[in-house]
Image (cartoon, rainbow, N blue to C red; front, side, top):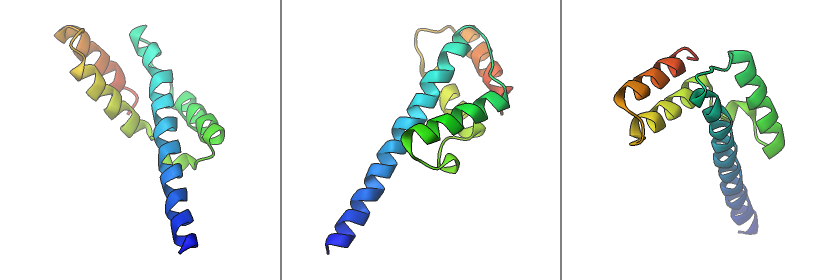
Length: 98
């Protein structure tokens, strides 16, 4: 019974770590987009590696380029402070990462 509780609790902790790590990746990339800069795939791989190490999670469990850019595109489209032209410009920048 105790083992089952701790194994389930461990999975919940790992999922929370993943969520925090993925959000950190989003927050680290977002300022570049505001300046209309796009990180290379190598930079994204380095961010993923260091974030995984920092939070003690597997790199493969973190966002890949597709997931990262998809979430950033979704945030951009949902942002009511940007004009339609700005939204499209940011989305096109993000598409170049995929």
